[in-house]
Length: 66
Image 1 (cartoon, rainbow, N blue to C red):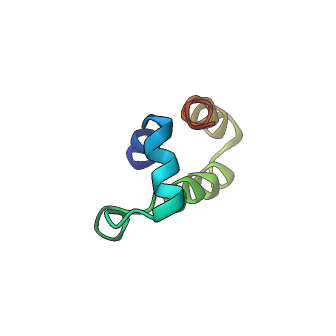
Image 2: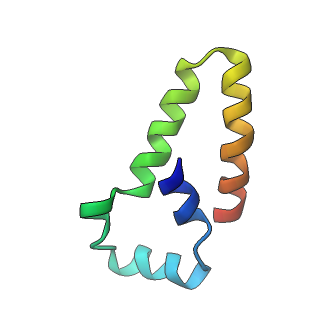
């Protein structure tokens, strides 16, 4: 979750640079989009109540990213 949170909170200009040029740090530190996809899988595997709590947390980071 930390990887997605840190990525989503970056300034928009940095996000655009990553989109245009790629980010070589993802090779060593992890791809935030893979981390977000993993969070989706985890939310599907959790019980409904626990998944709801995690979705609330993740949705805040998603809102910051969009």
